[in-house]
Length: 637
Image (cartoon, rainbow, N blue to C red; front, side, top):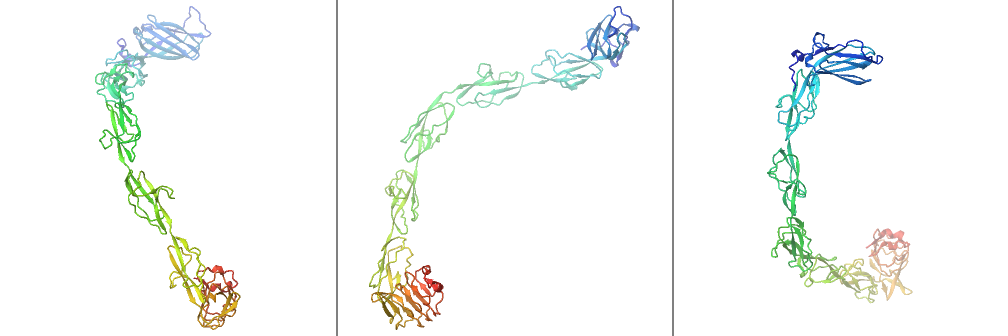
């Protein structure tokens, strides 16, 4: 730091006025009066001094810089003892004069600025107001090595940009953090590059430092991660380090080079002087063998498996087999029943060869029964390999007889016997059935011409066909019944489900009827018959009764019902005219009889449903000529 002992104290407080008089005189050597003017500078001492108020004894040199936009810069330096010069300046407006006075150590002590117009061929007076310059110096008090930044000189009140870097100052283990007006950092802080306002005195800014902490980073090179150690002071140690592991390797040490050619790093002894990355060094472990023992199995082979000590690998998938058993895993001993490792499980190799033993679990099988329409049979479960299902629960099916169980639904497989067939897998077996057949016997109950059945043997669930009608002269055939007493008629649309006998029903014909030969058949009329329930026979004297004559029963008011047999093929007009009590007509035709439209004229008791057709469909009559007249009175039964 420079001192100001040679300067009056009042010059420190206020600006001094330096008047530079430029004398006008004729020069010994001519100058270009058309383009330049002259400025003569002369610093003297005493009362004739051209710089009143300045102590000439303190000024050793004066630097003058003359600038303008339309000219090159002119620099002039005047030194003791004369401190004078004659300067030619290009003519023009706004020539700037920057004047700095320095002491014998070349330290700036005064500074002034002036501007003037230069007239060609003229000598000019220039007045410059000089201000005292003060020094802003930089120092370190913490023992840093190197040189601080060069001081700067400014007038009081001017702003200075504080040094961004501390020159060449270096403090081991610390980072430069800025400047402070107090050496211990208790004054006003200034960040690097901040603006500082110059006081009316010399000033010092002191370097400030922040302690540096270092980080040790660990590259495990394939091992488990190790967290960095941070906040280590210069020369400090990282401390005991977290271990790292690597499958198949043994840790050796940490090294400053990845290949191990650097310096071994010990967290408890190696000093840390910078951020550093250290690298784990590893030694490969040897390999050992896993041998697989079949342990009771009978099929398959397996190759030994090699695994590096300290590493884990999935065991080779099981390749052994044992009929009737499933593989349960591996145990570490032949007599150890509980598996220690499942198939394909991870195995960590120790420091020696090892043998693993297959463990087996007996399979139990299930036989499932598909009764194919029969009653359900529960599955047989828990059967060991090669065992039998045992005596099976019977199954039944309406209309069928059980034959056997078979491995295929259609019976083309193998017969399955619960007491002898060995079970070696889960299996479904299928019931085989024989459809029942039944004999239907038709009992004519005294018929002179017995019935001829269409098929006396029928399959279960199939209706039996209607046989030919039996024959007994002078009787009316009344159909087939399931009982000999003929109380329940048989419906031939119903499927047969058992062997049975059907019985013909006969009703004796009314006496007194009159039969008229008509070729090979007979016509019938009332004759002397008086039955109110009139029964007309199917046959008379061996031939069929086929026609009810015109007016055959007309006017018989006492007749309540009439039975018309199947053999009747024609009912002529007015056959039952004015039978006023006739309310029920029973008809047994195979085909619609040919009838006149007036066959029931005057039968006032006939209403809807009076004409009954046992077992027939009324639509069979829809083509008859009388249909439109009598269809409303007909009813199937």
